[in-house]
Amino acid sequence: MRAWNVKEKKWDFVLLDDGLVYNRFTDVKDTFGNEIYEGDIVADYGGEEYAVKLVKGVFLGISKEGKCYNISSPCTYVVGNIYEEISF
Image (cartoon, rainbow, N blue to C red; front, side, top):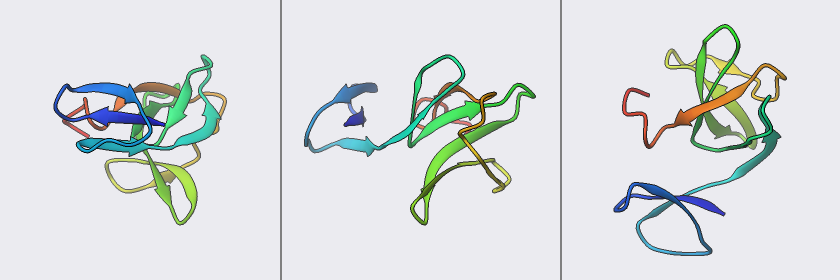
């Protein structure tokens, strides 16, 4: 499982550890073949950005305005994550 290491401010792949925020793999890859995880920020070709969240058992892209979007679009690509992008 991928987890954000709060102290070292980097991604770790671990089983269990205190101080880590765990992010589930969505089973979706972006247009460039990168795996999309819960907590990632994805964008579409129009430049709209969404945070990936698990909502009622479904991974969705949630905009800053709270609108929901499908993250499995072939135009979606990872641009960052909610832990490194303070503005999101």
